[in-house]
Amino acid sequence: MDGQGGVGVACIMRFMDGRPASEDVVARVAAVIAKTQKIPPETVTIDQSFEELKIDSLDGINIVFALEEEFGIEIPDEPALKIRSVREMVEGIEKLLAVRNP
Image (cartoon, rainbow, N blue to C red; front, top):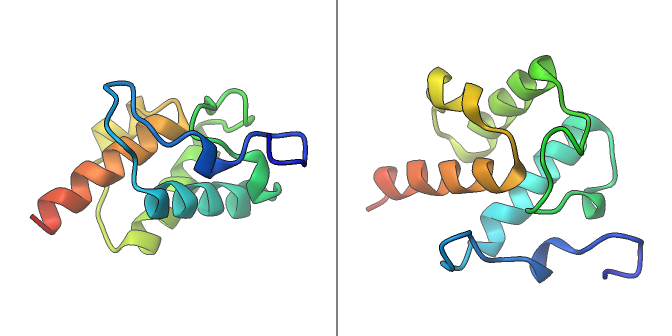
């Protein structure tokens, strides 16, 4: 726990396949979601679903636009529509960044 009633982002830093997640990407995604949703950043963790964060489809679109700006990437529409969690968002962004910066 992070002392604020939530689990800190840095505490949960592994993808489902065991690979370590980039702390920087996780923190930046959490910060963008928090800013867009007007919630404290420490309440956003990699293991949360968008439903848990009360993110609807319109919120999701706004988050995608903000993340594209934050990371200087373009998130394709079709895969973006399938994202349902912070973890999926981080994994997708890391894949796009890896392609951009091999």
